[in-house]
Image 1 (tube, rainbow, N blue to C red):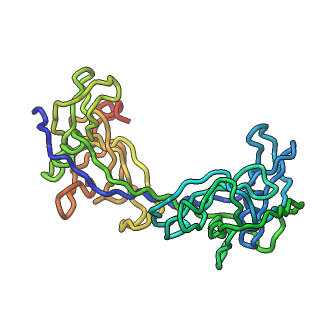
Image 2: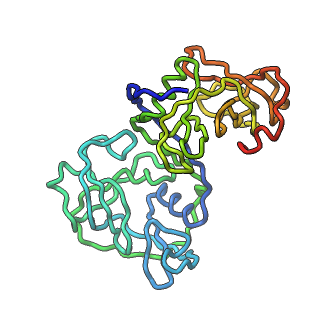
Image 3: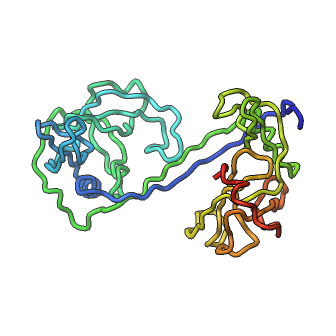
Length: 319
């Protein structure tokens, strides 16, 4: 048992990415299919307001909405912000303005990019029109951007039944977050210990639980934790799941087992993959030990130790 020294603070770039697949209801399907056909659809509420993008339920009354209307492709900027440094995946690669545009005939505004030479060329109240993408697939990106347009003509709205050939019924929305992660004092010490093939946690001075990975404070008692405790390396499988879907960029054959493992001396279980045993032989109470990665920086997976299974009472509080 030692008191943790203050280690060198670690920092690393981190990317969290998840492609979210969703099906579309009749209103969203008509809206996105319409964009593919260079048609902008809104939906009319019971009190006569036209919402763009359309929604399937009135945000104020929760009434179901199905009364689609077609709008023109021109509108008015209601507010804006200049973007001097576009990021990867944004609508334009050169500096542009984010704008809220109230299309003619609509009562709400649509967020998109405005192609303008500089912030001095953008103003609230300016007239703009849609610039369509050359290739359209049924997504909001079918609107390449807005561009300045001097006409004051308002094309109004007209009823639309939402029917198109080959309608879009689902979309994949990629979500991505790029940031620099700094783990802080407690987790930095934890990562340094892993590089030495050790696993350390921190003990709460109040409830005496040992948290792995350490968080710098006890989530139950709310007090700071500084007493460093080495745990494991062996542990017990408390519960587990069998993974049958192969993850992108993960070179592990399915099926495999992902488990909660209570390391000896720890006050809660951590996650880990189980290897060295057929997936259908993994069980609660199985005693396991770490198999370190090739560079020795972290446990690649856990394998059976050959010991008798742990008694349920020994780990039931850690489920």
